Length: 238
Ligand SMILES: [Ca+2]
Ligand SMILES: [Ca+2]
Image (cartoon, rainbow, N blue to C red):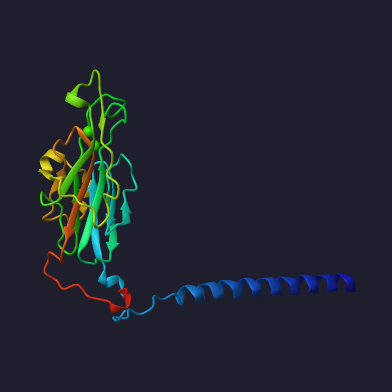
């Protein structure tokens, strides 16, 4: 009888200990959650998130984008569905923007959907400092097809992508002006309308359908919206 009592007491004690540990752990986790507060914003010598500008980019079908020689954004979806990439950019002027944009196209035929049709491209960008894509940008097609729109015997022409084409000091003076295309011509999909692209124009190289890989470049000397960029001497190399 006494033995049974002892056994019961031990089990009870174990139960109480387990319950206490469980309660203490969940209390600590809850405390940690409620204590999770962002640090206060300090307006000072280092840039804060408020010093960044939102960049919106829509490409039919894909892009990668460099700013001042650094890769800052890559479209996360290669083909479909069409999407907008929106990232925070810390602008430093002069700001050289370089873009590689690709229409969906088979490497051998330049066509899409199992070589059943010729697809069309399109690229548009807006940065919250007032920078927008337009015919003041430069463009260079480096892959096109099917040549002569010949879909029976489709051929593709590729140019060598110039070395360092995304670098700040690259000479793009031989490139053509980008060509603007209307929204009605490009027919952007729904995500485009969910972001601010006001004032920006759709651009591409000369042929929206046959040019399949296009490089763009544009240098922004100062914020187009007339704002004065903050300077952070701490970040400047001496
Ligand atoms: Ca195409
Ligand atoms: Ca396309």
